[in-house]
Image (cartoon, rainbow, N blue to C red; front, top):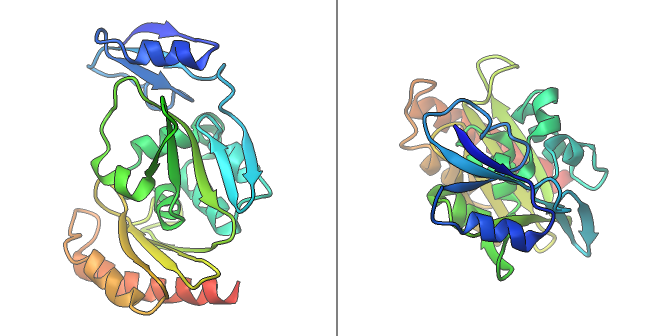
Length: 251
């Protein structure tokens, strides 16, 4: 239940509210998560007036403001087609218009196509105060709410080739197996696996693509759940990552 609603127009005011001991105060982006009925009580700080909704190219980086909506990012001509596909699989059109990039990543579980792709791209989160930078792959598995801190932007490389493949029970379902592979001009290759658990898994980050299938096999070794067996995910995942690697070599 939302106890208080605040809409500051300055970052510092937002940070002061978020740093309060009582009541628990959380950042509100698009409201798709915090506006849901909940037994918990908290205050919210609406971020929409803070100017965090810009997408800017900075050299080989695309810098995405925390409150950029999923649909705005999908509409950007700067992003790779595979990332656009992941965004469309992440949520229906109406939710993409409201849901924000930072909020979606903060709430993502292992079945999030967007989080899988962003992990493969080695996305970096920037926090205030202090302009601290965090690797998404390190933060997602252990994410906890950090009182008084705020994600302001997410940066992804523009010089990495991205490929995404997934398997689901139906075309409308979220995937039970999802693979994203990113390859840099140097040959560096990152592979992320999703479709189960609390967050995607970084299966590989190496100087080349060799070993990707083995890495995916190992990543799914303990992935049994109600949706699919580990054996199925291992078999499907190794086939899908082979396709992804081939795509990154051909793009």
